[in-house]
Length: 174
Image (cartoon, rainbow, N blue to C red; front, top):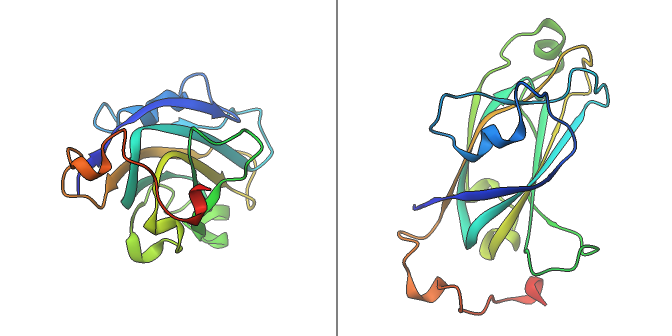
């Protein structure tokens, strides 16, 4: 269960200048969230993150900050820009309609494991994550994530089988 470092932000749809998306890069820092721009009333927030290397993803811990739903898709930096990502975690409810409208339970933590992920994506190695957060129930306040931690299903990231020159397997990588 080795931690996986997020190396950088590839793209994002919105951010509050006071709470930028880069806050997700260091989950052990002063716990400042990534929030949508206060003027953004779309109800949807996306970020694409580059992982340090391609690994099988075993666990993802997420700190919610007002999102009603979260979906996590995965891909590879080697893919062409028009190739669609693969869904790892289908849209999952983080807040109910009632909680969203009343502003309750906005800051929960969800810990996802391999059993929560869709096959065959859960059996592959990935170096890109695309998170889609949505809050369709209330559009008058910013929302986002307070932290994101990714861990590999490997015991150690020094595993020679998963070295940088090792080929990536299965039909999804074709």
